[in-house]
Image (tube, rainbow, N blue to C red):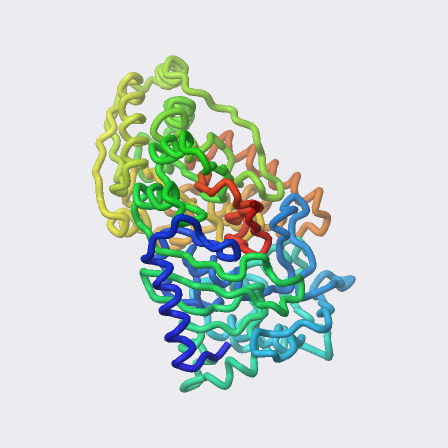
Length: 532
């Protein structure tokens, strides 16, 4: 979408006016959201890999397949592609694009645009490109392996991957379909329009980008010709409000419709306020504890087993993480194909002590390096106290997030406590990092694998099972394969899933059908309505 300078200035002024003024009530056709959006770096779907940028792209672009925010139980469904067919050998998928869909520019959405969008993402090779390149696509072969013919688009892969694996990956924002003609008209020095798309959009989604001012506000406008029907909210304004207390005050005053970054304290305060409500929604982020197998003490199977019983699961989720996390002890989050819901561990210091005693372990000192966020520090201090009861000493070193990440990627953190968020909506996204590590040597430098970061030499049969699950054509069998992998993982792995994050959004009572994306996608606005 191309805006002239006068139009852009007017829209930006409108957005910023709404971002600073106080209203007794937001307009009936406008959704005003308070959120921390200072992480937006780029709005190009081939580059954006930050939560807030993905939120914008999820609403300004369509993909070949996507999710229904009012029926997430059904999983992915047809979107720009009305149907698809898998070849007999499983190496290719051919999509049939629906007719009559237009980009915001007015140009028709063609299979040629979809093919070019995927080719472009592979060629640019930005951070999220691996979501597509894992199917064998490269800059050199993309035009040969991703082709369009009339209203058909065909993907030819290097292996017969499970159709559900491929389709889940095509729901990711990197698979968004961009307007080829508009983007190429704004190309500079062979960048395939990347510079222009960093701050503009060329999609066919339910909303157009009206304005974006970094660290201040994003404004979206309803696309009245949207193929699934024009959204009820004619404008969406997302204000960058970093402090939970400020979001709570704005919500209580009626200046915003949704507050997305509330602390447990502010959630509790809002619960007593008339006219507002709290909506809980499980997200895909998992808090886990990694036990580095380079540490002599932590590499003892008895210590690994004992540590699983030294976490006060109920105490933690019932106090300082109350409402923000729920106990979940498998590496696939709730909401994913093949998730295992078994919770085999409870807080049991006496059992942990017995496990250690039976193994002849009388004590020891271990270090954890913690990002200086309150929730991680609180978990570490609680663990420190329970470990002390079992005769183990935990030393806590607080660092910045960058410092901890650098040390963790260098395999230098004995006990790591932090979070992992899925990169795409398929179970392989977590299986391939928690339960896959074919080369555990330092030289491998497989920093993207949590197993490698914790020096966990994943058993060969688990590595093979993780790969085999990406190739299983039957979805039910594939789901069971992931459950089996997680069961083995729970029994022996030194990386221990603890909690799944819950987003607690504060809403005005009249806001209906709010959906922040659940565990598998980003926020979707087109179904939101406001009652009387």
